[in-house]
Length: 440
Image (cartoon, rainbow, N blue to C red; front, side):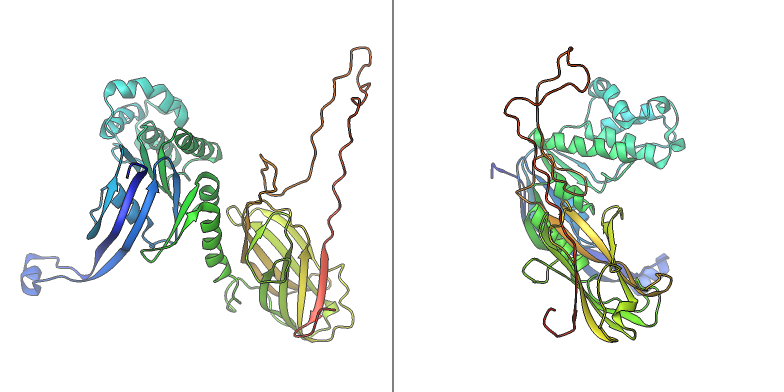
């Protein structure tokens, strides 16, 4: 199809896992055959990658992501089915292929470029651009065996992306180098996309997929679990990882600290309608519901909630129940809810810690560290250019600059200008109700 860059039709791929190998000719003759089992990495994959699209492939380790990418790159041949590629293709499946440790950085640029199909004249024309992108100008005449891991990877990536194919396959190489270099890598991928090239990325960086890719494919156990818009697929995958697994009550050995008079028995997230979910939108209502068992009056127990970004573990916000009135609640089973009427968090994944402490916060009764997760989806009402972690309301205004005679601070508001409205304050609500009883 003219509008399809890559077409995978009923692709199956297996590997042999050997349990016993013959180490000598005698063993090979006597045993006749090595014992192995067939492992199917891909099981009937049907996938079309549209020309000019950017697609992210996500999934757990061992799910078949890299195997699928290698079949697209024609490095691996499927046991069954076929892969059709329409256009020139380049792959970044492993950085540094073709680099020789004894050669200098300069020599390796030419060597690696030739292995990627470029002539010496082409490499010379792009040499300065490659070196500038890698940021290793002063080390180009040094043998690469003396490079740091980051320097080696940066130069290899710079050489690889100097190729401008119609289709680019990338396998987990956007995480090399420091923050500045990673930003340049993402910018280069964005340029490929804006120039109409087809890009397929395999990565564990969900925020990279959500921000860079229009489409996403979630592979699990060698089959496609879900495909479609990147925001929807990433949210479903995050919900499976941090919702279906992490939001279960952990074992006594996992993610807990402390023991004694109070314990957490269950944690769930509710939307504005009171439905359990792990997917929210910016400015929507989020309620953290904590079920607990206490041997103390509830007033003597402090509930703690902390939120972190899942991709960096950056601490986003935290609250305790110091200001909540739990008086009159005896020992026993309870449901405590912490509600934020308009959650200001921007799209991405977030992890939540929930803990119980004594009133003086000197003793930990129970603590589940970053064990629960939810995902923030794109909100169509967000203004263009919103970035960061939280959405803060604000207004832009413009007025004439003050004249020289008015001096500093002498500017008057423009005629007809309207002062911006002050954003309404958002309250945070804590609620307590006995387990099984209606809300108080």
